[in-house]
Image 1 (tube, rainbow, N blue to C red):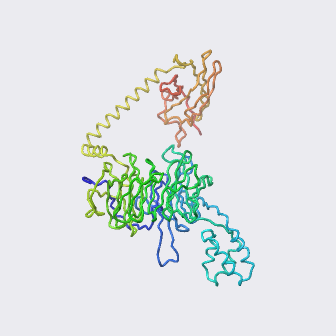
Image 2: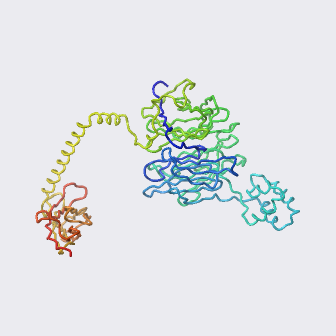
Length: 605
């Protein structure tokens, strides 16, 4: 595409030490975990070190590209999402991490709750075998294990599957250890995503959609941790889900698209708990999306194809790719009114498609294993990529970007590329700036003196105008009886009690009308803070009936010198005033404005 590239490359050469990640797209999320308006990157770093006994994972939190927090995880996660579980203020996101058959919830980066999927009923034959194994002799165990092998392996509980894989010398100890544990078939979570409960604002409460390896699709309500939807991918239990995509809201209607390991794609709805087969391919999928606007299903396959289907299973178009697609990512761009699809290919090329048309592309030095798009730091449109060696690459969408169909290859366009498209990593900490703001900032820098002088003149003119309007409004209302003919006439009287430094100011409001009620009244007190302190300076009054006076009181405390307990020297009979304003709700001009002269306060010895 001619002209400047659409993506700014964030330079991370100065970051020391440079962070490394081994993760998947499903194990990355963006969240305002500290509730400070700064969106941080969360990722599960999966350690596959050969020296370790078994793989391990760590939840890492980045501010910009600097590691700020680490949280060890009890297992290898399959997905990480950030969601809001209620509408209480301030809104605090919860991090959900799916590991095996459980979902771990973290709030403020601390463990909050653990939810485990309910176990399924086991086969009667398996229950009978586990009842006999602990009490029968060892020489009868081979016969019992042979009866277990007659059951479909996918229908066995985990401890039965593990028992069948052990040698004879290990079985006795395993049986004695697990003889009292329940025999239940629990599915592991293989995919997880969020489903908004409502779409009233930008951060509505959400539910979790869970897909298990036994073909179940569950929707978890995370506030009470209840299952609000249970469905199945299909009747065939060998169809194990691998990918999932959701659109819609739970309160109205939603669609769940599930891809299985054998290449089938199924559709579930709110009113349809059994999956309907949309299409079936003879090869596994590497990516699956349900686009929000046109409700089309996007899939990438291991035979280098990019496919688009309708919900009825009709192939709308397909694109033959040059390399194997590794991951697929939707890029919603609401400011442009379109949704792009990013495809990371083997070798480092990342292509962007608008429907069937290639609109943009760039290339990195190595294959991209994971991608994430959204608001990061203070920038709205940030694309984060994790390469095969663990490097983190960050690109920011230009504000004047254009996406048009293009042709050509990337033979000479590699990660460094155009120097004009490289920005510093500190851009993630800055608020977004439009081109108009940048030009205005440049002009102010060149003409700083005249700009500052003009600003001060306008500021003092504004202050003078506001002060004059305030004085005019108060002076025109200085009376003890309201003169507004559109409202019931009201009379205000005041009485001060006490010898100081604490006084009690009593105000009596009387409705002089014979038939009209005075309502929505507010009393506002104002005093010089150097002389008096009023703990509660405003009070909303109930409706004042004709002939029934209303009496309210306020506490007024005179300010005394902390050393000699005397009133300040600036206090005089002329400025020892408390201004009382009786106002009508929704009106700027007070009905009554009066000044109450305060008595001299006695020293508080």
